[in-house]
Length: 288
Image (cartoon, rainbow, N blue to C red; front, top):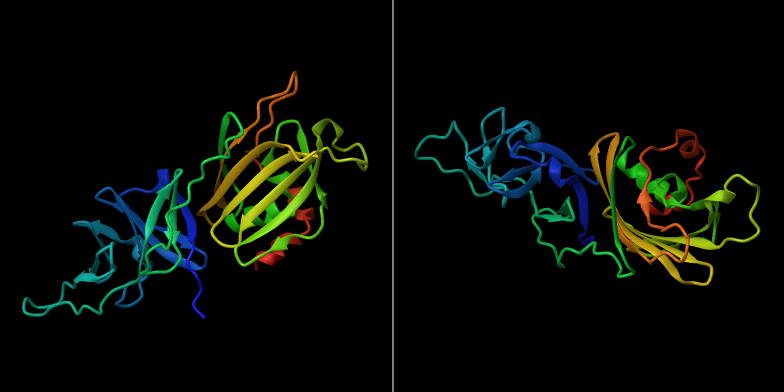
């Protein structure tokens, strides 16, 4: 059975330049560069000896392997130049590497998961739900990409910063709901002033997380116990290096009521290592 394609965030747009860089889409290493104003990505291996193209030079708008000088078009992965061929010889059309469709959205580079394939749908917008004032937060976290996503699902209070609200990581409302496309889980939340004051008998807030099974996206919703929505945010994760991850939260919130502190969904800048160690990896196991 052929797996359906999906988009996957691989880099913050600001990190991409006309110099080649290696990115990872799931377990696939790719080479990414901006060529003539357009982001292009290929499988990170030369068709000749399998050398990494991510250490290549961009020459005349093409990826040039540093070992034997084979050059590839970023748009289709075709090998265009082999230096040791004679003038009479032509590069066989079968000499190529997989090319990946690249899109930019909300400051992130998205790769279509199926090499040599075009996206089946338009790139989704991360536009926030129209609750009121828009909110936006971004953070570079010294923590691995997949581990950040796992923590969002298993212990969201470690990742999410909601002013005036503490998420109770140990109190989920039932088991997560899982489909082929997403995981849906709900956590209890209390006013931050009640944090550390023993077991709560009531939970005036609820945090709902709907995370994509693939692709590093999640939708987070903060509601009151009466069901009214307080804040919402789309979150997207992108690996920077093995131990670094960029997170963007793009959302909106309702207008504050009276003297109540405005609540929005943001991102904590530092991962608490003790809390991360103690987090129970229950929900994230459904991603495996």
